[in-house]
Each structure stands twice: as structure tokens, then as C-alpha cells.
Length: 88
Image 1 (tube, rainbow, N blue to C red):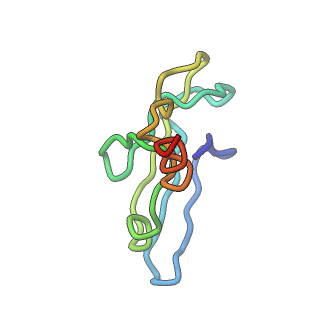
Image 2 (image 1 turned 90 degrees about the horizontal axis):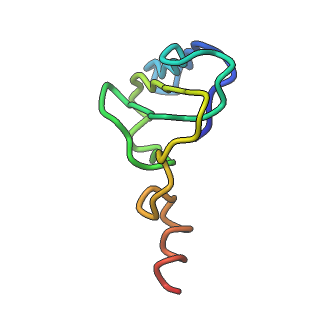
């Protein structure tokens, strides 16, 4: 997951449902993700399974001027990368 380039984007999914990406929770020139929410719940991982998005919803991004700890824990990595780290 990375910061969207636009303040708001709406995507009509094959199901006809709407997936909204909202970057209005931070100042536009900010580069660093502080938090990501899906349907009002904070996400603790840097990836989202398609199963969670396929029926639409709102994905909100909070950005800031400084780095944060969001997405830095091993548990936040995608399964393939996280599984690799746990094997070593």
C-alpha cells in the first residue's frame, strides 16, 4: 500500500460495487503513511486481500510529513514475504 496520487478516487468493481480511495486525512504534499483504514477500521498490514475489497468500501489514507511505525512490523508484511522471514 502506498499513498494515493489523488485526494479521492472511486473505482467501480466488476460486481458493480464502489471502492473509494480517500486521501483527505492528511496534507497533500506529505509523503509518509501514518495510518490506513478500511471501512473505519485501522489496518495493521501493508496489504489487503482481494476478498476484503471485492464488495467495495472506503479505504482512507492518513499521511504526514514524518515517518511512522505504521507497516514496519513483520506481521504487517504480505504473507509470502512474512513467511520467508519467519523461516530464517
